[in-house]
Image 1 (cartoon, rainbow, N blue to C red):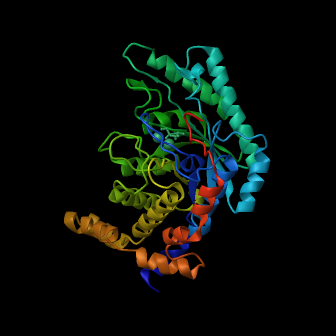
Image 2 (tube, rainbow, N blue to C red; image 1 turned 120 degrees about the vertical axis):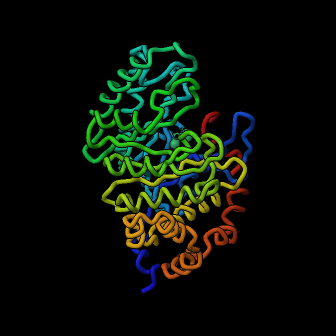
Length: 388
Ligand code: LRH
Ligand code: MN
Ligand code: MN
């Protein structure tokens, strides 16, 4: 057996969830460029996600964002997804685009606004009941722009109360996943800015409340793999929102800006048992394709995660531990770097073929004619999010 054969079963079990919004047009505050073939409906987003799965075998579910993906019949949407070969995954709430939330949502001083925000989350739980989704993911834009603008302590207390009310309605097989982000859109303080705050809030709720780590949501230079280690150690790493960044929350293709960081993260995932499905870690993408084509952008992304997972799995743990325990600084570092520099691409291509998948999913998509077909068929595709 080669080393690759040893890790193949773990690679075969890997599942990466795609965000519906990655298939819509997106951009910056300056411009949203549209891409030919952009989905006009939720169903078309799901159909595109299913193409990624068919070509890679890696993406069996798609996350929805409510209200961006609001439909009348969620059970019907789940059936449609199943017919396409994928499932509806995480349901993301959204309390950041309505006027009522100008000064906050679950933290707002006005009980009527908090009620509206809580009701929205209860609606998301109903959607989950209809789709069979496990996770309700909450990211809050709540925060302030100026020192003294609000009482930060009061907002934290109201957040805890609002979350408790939502958590009380989370089903026995469901989870509440709280995502943090250090700034934006608020520029002075954010109510859930870091993993510690998210951890404190979910720990107070109970077992089925966990944390989402979005790789783009940290200050530059943050040791993200340390946070991965700690949340896994505490049993509170619920999910990843994978993307990469050069500056802030850039939402670029995962593994594009800093492949070594993605490798280091996957090393800690493996170390902490996070690849075991029983650990319950959801591996999701949270990306936007502003200038590149969206379906190939998603294919590239899941392949990047697979590649870094393979390299992390190939890490020679015994040698690493021996070097660490011997105080061999450079030896330990070299063992890690040897795994990072292992080119797994030929082995992955051959392995894909042996499982009936294209050796090169990017090339297979380009040759499939799908892009030409949707470009011709779909006129007037919708924007991913904000202006939709
Ligand atoms: C916030 C965020 C969060 C939202 C998504 C669209 O920056 O990462 O996960 O749901 O972007
Ligand atoms: Mn995110
Ligand atoms: Mn983000």
